[in-house]
Length: 380
Image 1 (cartoon, helix red, strand yellow):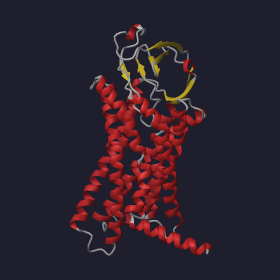
Image 2 (spheres, rainbow, N blue to C red; image 1 turned 45 degrees about the horizontal axis):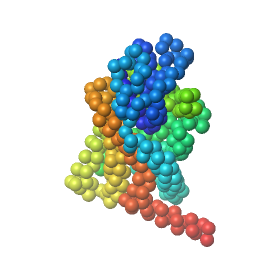
Image 3 (cartoon, rainbow, N blue to C red; image 1 turned 180 degrees about the horizontal axis):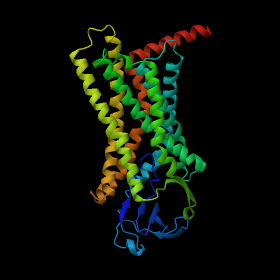
Image 4 (cartoon, helix red, strand yellow; image 1 turned 60 degrees about the vertical axis):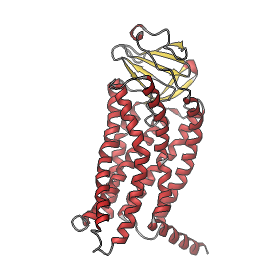
């Protein structure tokens, strides 16, 4: 018997929803508030029967099926009430700021008379990925505010969550590409200079978007709208066919969405810092321009790591909990709370990037001033 907790991987399921799946009997428990609904899929997953059971605070529900009689559930923390209250407001704020900031960045890059550099092409696509994430958040904010009653249909349930997952994957791989570009620009400028051409960058961005779509297919496939009639709630949840599939998807997220890209980013960043320290580029006329671009990229990379590393570390601990490598109610409750908080921290990254462009990016500020001057002359 394995307990599957809502790990909130991009709001992987309604947090009120707690799944417990048994491989043989395929019992699945969906708990909301202080009550539980048992869903028996057994041999035919299309024939579902419901049985509602009250939960005594701090204890295990008394009417478990026989196969679950010895399984105990951890009491829910009171901190959830505070989290549920702040979720919609926070997501709306992130949404508004993220849309305004990233649209501003894209307008500056697209409308400026000079062609974008290779780094700016990657950062522009990063802004597009952040914009995609920000555009999906209002749906979840409304969903949470309405008691997790999904109002937008089955198609939007899949598309909205696919957009969120796709944004996450594309964002990290755009950062991989821009870190590799800075690495080549500072360390191997003469050897690999031809690889740093705009059309190579555009082709790479297209490949990243395609990769993001492919890696988001599981979310599009398993996101379902299901009616929980006892609570009159139509919830948009991840409905995996088995525990093995869910575990595989989470491991895929950690490997391809965190470990591999962060390893590449970390290696490139260390080499970039060494190159700047040794001043290996002083003999080139473009040194100042490259260093200005590199400082901005390093700031964006640092912001990304600060926002996303805690989320993925908790995800790893969550996997260890579900595989019973780790256990304990205190750890389980702490991971649940941290998952929510670190999800919010990760979402805030889409707002930080435009701010960093303005504060740290000297070339970006220069483009903004030039664009402002040309606009004033046009309408004068």
